[in-house]
Amino acid sequence: MSLVIVAEEMITLGSGDLTSHYERFLGAIDAGWRADADGRSVPFQVARYSGVIAGGTAFTTLGLSGWELKSRSSEKTIRLELMMLVGSTLQSNTIPGLLQQVGLETIESNSALLRGDVIGPRGKLFAGSNMDALYVAAPVYLPDEFAICETEAGPTVTCWVVPISHDEAHFVIQEGWSRFEDRLVELNPDLVDVMRPSLFSS
Image (cartoon, rainbow, N blue to C red; front, side, top):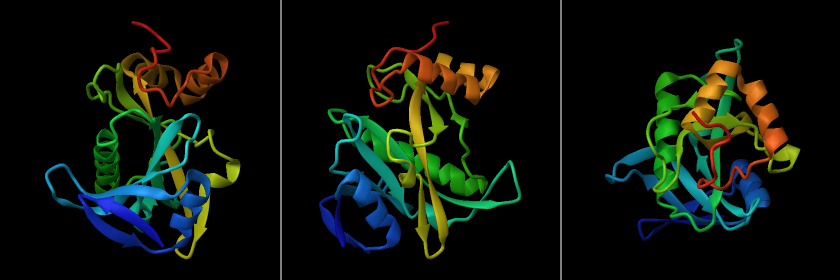
C-alpha cells in the first residue's frame, strides 16, 4: 500500500499492478494530488515519486487508464497514463496542474495521445523557461519494460510528456516527429531540464 499526501490529508492507494509497477521503477510515492488548484475533484490522481530518474523527479497520473481511449491511427482502444520528468529543484506544484489539464482534455476528447503528438504551444509553462508546449514521447530514460504495464483491465501504456519550446513544437508539426527525434538523438539535450535552451531558434 502507498500513502499519498493530498492537501495535508493522507489517502491510501491500493497495491494494484500499476502502482507497484511505477514504484518499482520510480521509487516510492511520496506525494499526490486528487484536486485541482481550485479544490475541485479530478477523476484521477497525480503522484510524485521519491526516486531520481536521469537527475530529475517523476510525476505520473494514476487512474487515467480507467478510460479506454480511441486511437486515431487504428481501430484499437488504448489505456494510458502520463509521466513527466523534471529537475528535482523545480517547484512541484506546477506539474500536477499540467498533468491534470492534459489528462482531462484526453478524457473529454476520447482520443489517446500517440507518440509524436504536440500539445500547444499555449504560453510559458514554467517561470523563467522558454518551454511552452508538450511533446508525447516513449519513456526512453527508463528501461524498456517500464513503458507498458499489464493490469487486470488490460495493458496500460505510459506516455512521457516532455516540455518543449515554441520552435521545437513547430519543427515537429512541420517536419514530423521522426525527424525531431533524430535531432534529439543527434544533439542529446537534457529533456529533464525545463530551463534548457531551445534546439532551434526563430
